[in-house]
Length: 236
View (tube, rainbow, N blue to C red):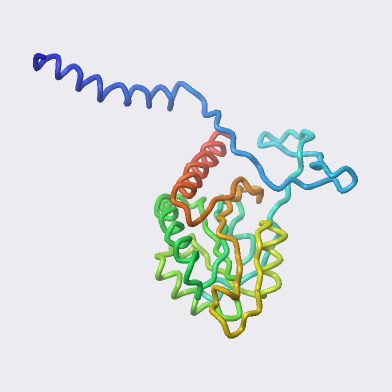
């Protein structure tokens, strides 16, 4: 094989992926559909509830009505009272943890650090981590934990507050389990039971995905679907 032939093969190898990317980026549409989760159920029929839904262009259609994450009032790692206004107009990833957790929580938090770094420069992406051990996890403990996982202030919020409110938010807002098993003298990991799931929530407060926060491949899917959601909003 001549040098010219080798150069031609190399050039083709380099150009084909680049041309394919340009074609897909500028001459095709993204048809990746991101589902919505947790529809409201019609109690009389046991089926998803239908009602008026306002679209991005202002028009109103009859469609499935979905549950929206309810309002909250909690305390962040800086001791400030925060509410749902911190996620208004933003896409966010919610999770549940506690600082004394020695099993799944460090793995989840490490994955969240990675996702935060990917979207570091995008102010429309934020993270909410709720403690299921709020009696222990006061702002000082949350602050130290946030520092450990390099949380960016104003982007990743670690939240504590009234225990009943947090557990209600977990179970009735995100539909995730949160249990205090009451093992007072045992290992904290045996006392507080919570989900390892990360939850992707859109700007309207509707859940768009659940992901295993201990599984790198599933967290990679979260990253992809955040990008898809950003693309969807950019075209509205």
